[in-house]
Every structure is written in C-alpha cells, then in structure tokens.
Length: 393
Image (cartoon, rainbow, N blue to C red; front, side):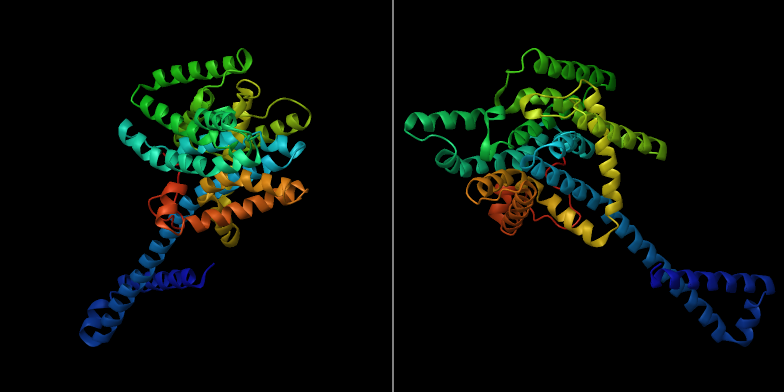
C-alpha cells in the first residue's frame, strides 16, 4: 500500500477517534472556555484530514480513469502485434492467431461506438480512415509497381492502378492488409445508420446480413466487391455484437465460460478444425461457431488488457503500440516483405518483430508533425497517453 494512502487512513482514524471522544465526554464547551487552542487544533486537524482524503480520492479516481482508457490502447496493441506476427509466421501459431486477430478490431470498434448523425459520422470516419488510406495507397503505388509487379509498359501501370482503385481482395503484397480500413469505414456507417431502428429490427437485419456473408463464402467464394464491401456482411454483425457487450455484466462465471471456449477453439484449430478466419478472402470459419470463438478471445484479451493496465512498464509499451496501430497496420507489410526479399531475414519471428518495431517507430515519427499526423494517421491532435484513436467510432 502506498505511504500516502496509509497516512490518510491514519489521519481519518485519529479524527474519528477524537470526534467520538469529544461527543462522549462533551469536552467542546470546556475547551472553548478554558483551552481555545484545542478548538483551533481540532479544526485544523479536521480540515487537513479532509484535504488529504479528498486529494487521495481524486488521485485514485484519476488513476482508475486513466487505466480504463489505457486498457483500450493495450488491447489494440495486443491486436496489432498479433496481426503483424500473423502475417510473418506460418504453421500452428499462424492458425491460432487467425482465430481472432481481425474480428477483434471489429468487436472493439463496436464496443467503443457512439451513435451519431449519419453525415457527421461519415465526415469523422472519412478523416480518420479514408484520408490515411488514400495517402498510403498513393505512397505505396510506385514501390509496388517496381518491386512487386511486372512493369513492362503502360498496360502494367493501368492494371495495378485498377487494383488499387478497386481495393479489397485485389490488394496484395505491400498493401495486402489495407482492405480492413475501407471495410471498417463502411461497417461504421452501416451500423451507425441502423442505430435509429428498433432493437428487433436491428437483430433481424444482422441475422440477414450474416446469412448473406455465409452465402458469399460457400456459394460465391470468388465474389469480391470493391473496397471489400462484401466483407462488411461479416464485419457488421461483429461490430454490432461489440456494441452489445457494453450492456453485459461480465461475472466470473461468464469470463470462465469465455476462457473455456477460447481454449477449446485453440485445441480444435491445432487439430485441423477450420475455425480460423480469413476475412479478406471471405473465409469466416465455421458458421456461428467461429463467431463465438472469436468473441470469447475478444473478451479474454479485453480482461487481460485491464489487468495489464495496472502493470507500469508493460502497460506503457503496449498502449504506445496500440496508439500507433493504424500506422503499423499500413506499414508493417512493406517492411516485413522487404526484410524477407531484400534483407535476407529468414527467421519468421525475428522478421515479424523487426517489422513491428520499424513500423512503430515510423508511425511515432509521423505523429510528431501536424501534417503527417493528419494525412498518415488520421488524427487532428497528437494522441496523448490514455487517449483512444481511430478504432473508436
């Protein structure tokens, strides 16, 4: 226990004892007549003890408030680490990470969403998501053209430009991950617009949308809409489920159930059951089962992030990574692929760790300048410690 808390508790205990003593023996009239300094001492002790208690309570509230905000960044930090490593490694660890790595961000975005006027929401999300999307796509066009595509002439340039404009599943290599950004933007707009409906109408629409997502997966797996719009069919129910988590009290029994489901999904995946997700390619695992498994992982990692928020060094590191998650998401693939193709970094875990570190440092540098922060990270203000960023609607 910190010393100042113990001191405050002792002051309050002495004050209560003194007050009970005065009330019991009625010494105040006597002190007022014979020893005026006792009244002064009594009032001074009262004011001082109240000051210490109020200050301690205020500091404690501020600390808890900061931890409540910081765990969100910690969870985003864990999520983006899993995303980066999942794109670098293969095998069982890769399959395990794909159990939840992209659904986690849709669950989290939904849990942070606040219903807004549709036009206001669209403008806000466009600044935070679409502006960085356009800027990074423009920056990555030439590296992709010269390093990853045949560039024999104008036809190759136009072919790549068409892929960049169409987006979604046709984005690969350096820009293979950025389908998420346009998908999240469209998902936010759709669910925000549906917030005006009654609850049962929303439930019915989400069931219909989810069914269409599975029809896309099993009947028309080659159907890829521009800007990953078809993936919104799977992302919107995840986003809405995240919104509903704010209304749930997570008791020990419910948390234990989520932990058991997460462990079972991991065991099933390691034994060859097709539970993992590949949302970009419209692969959503086992119908309903994979949603439950991903949600269980989201809840477990959320609670773990809340625990980590009380651990000083670890929480600061993960929260810093989480605040740079959008920049890391955009840049880690070009770093990771370049390390593999041109840097001869063969070890998957080392290459993934280096891609995470380098893309984090670049994002951190971009956050220090107004123009780069706005255009590359989608933030009008520099993210302070404990702030939440672009995943929030």
